[in-house]
Amino acid sequence: MGPVADLKTNGGELFAGIYALFPGMIFLVVDGLVLSPMIHRLLVSFTSKVSERRVRQEFQEAKRQSSKATLKLSCHGRRNRRFGGTSDQ
Image 1: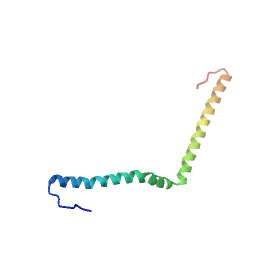
Image 2: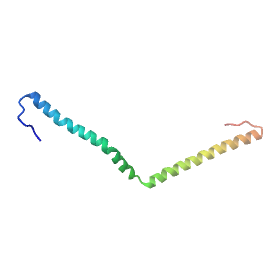
Image 3: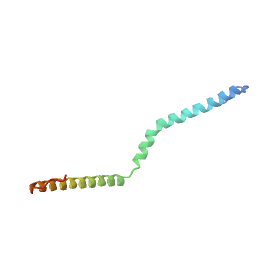
Image 4: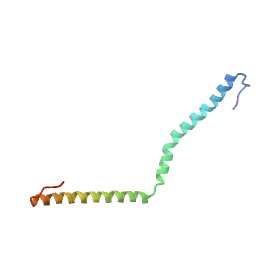
């Protein structure tokens, strides 16, 4: 699709150039907004199960270490109180 007649003024040529670029930019922006959720879903599906397992194992290990430290502190505090000492919690 092109101009129906020759453009005779500089203003007409400027308007035609801007009018040709503006719909192209709008088209790209709308395509990005429409396709981005689908592309994101596709990329997320490529994540490996190995990395999910590794993260889950690291979380469980950190949770175990945290509970062991809490148990050790609470037992230490009870032992000190039982023998007349003060708790260092």
